[in-house]
View: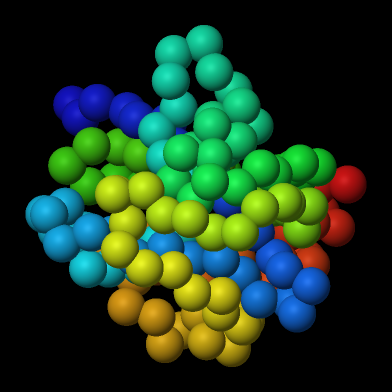
Length: 139
């Protein structure tokens, strides 16, 4: 039986309607040089909102607020990943990447299918394409 990892990822949308994505550094194995949403593993006794704020601060040097639940997905690979996807358009600061990532982009909804996501990150395509549906469903 595989272990379970809890992860919090965040869709951050800017005033132009674009979403922030980050590219893993070259020394991250199968994730190397591939794109993903900012976020990461939740620490013990941390909820998904706290994890999202900590991870965005750590990975991109930004502060985020007004987080909304979007969807929870379970991804089965070597380990089972319980992934919480959150959304915000409330953020401050300019993107300043940590060593974990080598690049960032703001992408439009239409560009989501063209991104070279790592194998566990492509789940985000239908979420980006149908974000309003998910947000309405959760309110």
